[in-house]
Image (tube, rainbow, N blue to C red; front, side):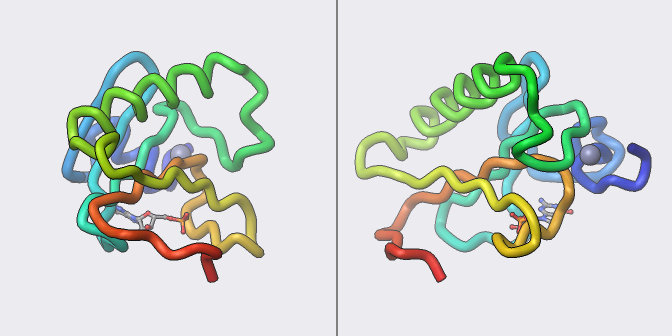
Length: 112
Ligand code: 5GP
Ligand code: ZN
């Protein structure tokens, strides 16, 4: 999908602070961080939202990447949060499936 920001980031056409790439997964620093560490992890192929991801391999690759990233950033020591916003009510702003990794501070619960 040519007009998708995250497809552009995964292809390297749009600049981002790359954190990880491997297999079909790409991760980058969020442009508007909500915590000291705020990383966005995406499938490189365009998947619009959570329920459109039919292939379990997508999730195994995403969570393998998340595991590598949280250890590399030292987030496994004190904890972190993984968030998916899917659809309008959740406030999904970019229609390309993405997983937020948030850490580096105490995170409030419940979210707003
Ligand atoms: P959502 O609200 O859709 O779950 O989250 C989208 C996230 O992508 C937001 O946290 C937003 O700051 C981030 N974001 C949107 N556009 C860009 C961009 O062009 N570059 C980067 N690095 N992050 C972006
Ligand atoms: Zn896309």
